[in-house]
Image (cartoon, rainbow, N blue to C red; front, side, top):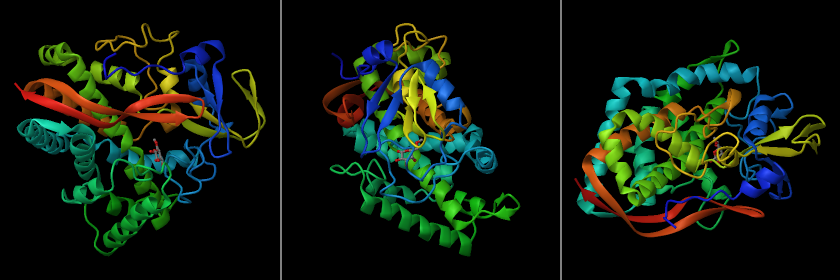
Length: 385
Ligand code: EMZ
């Protein structure tokens, strides 16, 4: 089997039952597996809330490592909309040519560097620097800050041997406290300053709220972007003809990106807390228990996607939920899509082929189910065009 093959571990249980149980730190989760049910549940934010105890909708639950509410992610309507409208214009900046030019130069330099090295471990020496350097553009902070973030590794809350590392989380919190204090003292044109100056319900955002947005910005788009970039490189290495196809048909690049997001679905699932006794997938859902919207399973649902386990670069109908669904759809999606577009355009123009030399898969443990989400290590040889 090719290294870039990601099997669907939910297929049988999704078809037969539509949901499955997962124990997570003694706070069980009913995972919703079918595309239709996932969308229906995501839509029903009154019954399936995001604004529970901070960290509880994340699987694995982060209640033991943080009490900061991530904003707007862990807030329900109607407040959600007010917070979201504060941050939305900033997170749409990736559409601007100036933003894209900055990203182009970052990605161009990284690809040149990689080609001249010849062989590179993609996760830590390509995708992590790419994600961190691109984040300086999203935040509009100095480029050098990326070096600090690179030193934190691929996840801000997880380390190699600990899936929930509280001391690691503190490094991020201390860093943000410092940056927020600096912006307060000396406002500049960055996200910290913009947030400190924003109004919510007729008052300024508090420092706690600013920190809530910043934690989400750092945590939410980190391993997801890193996995997306790494998995795409593995795919292009395995299917050399796809490099040539994207080079010859640049008009399909955007469609291809959506398909890669569907297939790899870098965020497996997101939880919700049940606000009153109800039913989900024909199953009782008790008040104050958790359900999860399993994006990874929904994106392989054969009742929606023809040949769901194949990457079809020009797939026509693709209502994937790789960026979530409903009011909480991914705030960073424009940034992520822009990174992917620029990456693919430059890569297919500069690289002739890539070869996977060695790899260690990153397997997520979902209790009874194991899912490959990416790689811990991926050693690749890049050949110049
Ligand atoms: C949370 C989450 C957001 C969580 C869209 O996903 O991403 C996870 O990686 C973080 O650990 O805290 O930000």
